[in-house]
Image 1 (cartoon, rainbow, N blue to C red):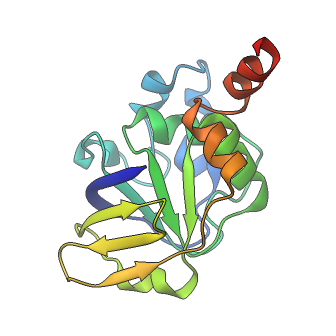
Image 2 (image 1 turned 90 degrees about the vertical axis):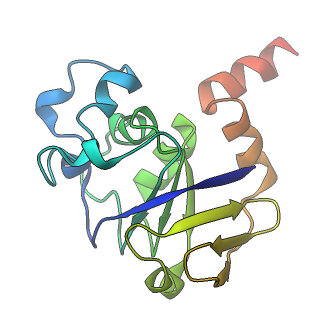
Length: 164
């Protein structure tokens, strides 16, 4: 998997209510949720995002309630991958279950700024910052989780396993 896109940086301790406020939880449709992604952080935030862009977050991203709608909203907004210093554990599992790739970069996240152009090669474990020329490595995602992502999340992955 290779991703290229412009970055959109949010801060530390962004909770699931900032990602997708409760008032928008009347649907599970990712596209509809995506229209209101980060509406709890800043009104109209989503207007800056183009399909394929990359979300970059600080520490403890996705804290708060266990809300499967949060990763769906990010996917629906057109952002297929999130880079962060660290993640809330329940958000981490929910994201992979919903088909959203998360990469944890620790302190290296400080080398990525809002508006940077990135190329992420998941198989190689490398992020090329096309704006600065810097390369950042990351730990590989386990193969079973990559298989789950490739199939669109846990439910589709299990359906395929049962059918085969």
